[in-house]
Image (tube, one colour):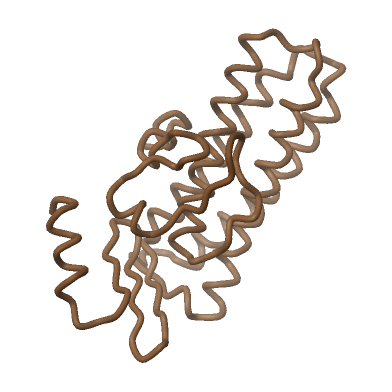
Length: 202
């Protein structure tokens, strides 16, 4: 289905504010919004975070002065891994979940919180490295960070969560409609697909 046909569906639907996404379905009826999430998509977002952590810590492994930053990333990575494992175990062979269900919301929010924490830890590496890391290493770290920030922004847009922590660049709100058409996140210039590819999730 093309973006144009999806937009036509938005206009023609009797439900207010419905958006059909590859990752989820968001529908508002009589003021009640229901969000259905694709389990694989949630897992992919979590894996993207783990891959970002592994990438950046590999950059830092040969720089003893960066050990505190590496430890912070590792701690965030461990928390995210635990949250993702708990989610995956609970989901089992389930293909979709309801974000309106309290237990699922708690599990999904845990993954999102850990992704945010991880993003902050990686951002600290970039801002606090000074002259310790080479220009090329910093560039690679920024690429990984911006890819992760893109994933987080898209994830939040799907959940209707305010993205108070903006990626590197100009703060900008990402909406579910932008996700629908595969638009790039304004603050990073990356699409979700590009960000996931950079972080080794396909």
